[in-house]
Figure (tube, rainbow, N blue to C red):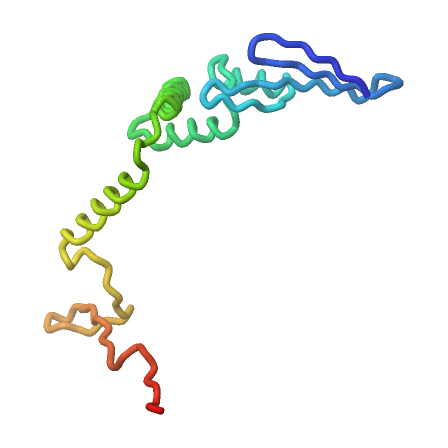
Length: 160
């Protein structure tokens, strides 16, 4: 088996041919994603299809799925080009963001904020266990019945 490597921009072509009749030639190119920088081995035909879909840019499969998600998530119809621009902007901002100076303090602050938010919410909005069957109220409608504990959930232990 022999291999030949040629480089051109962010694509590197690797041609592998079996010895003998030259059968089974597989040309593989390494293409670098313009969003996240991931490098994948792909055939030239696949690279051409992806570039055609994304206006000449090569985008890896993961970023391609993110672009599809961006199109679905948008409140209005947006083009693939606009969704790709949004995703590339997000990727660029994410990579340029510096890590927190003190991750432990950031985690504590986030947990504090979450706890305060949950404690300040009205009691009725919190989930409460209820039976799927309700009791009828005076108006003939269904009323939810809450579960009441009849005894301790801990098993009683006999004294020695």
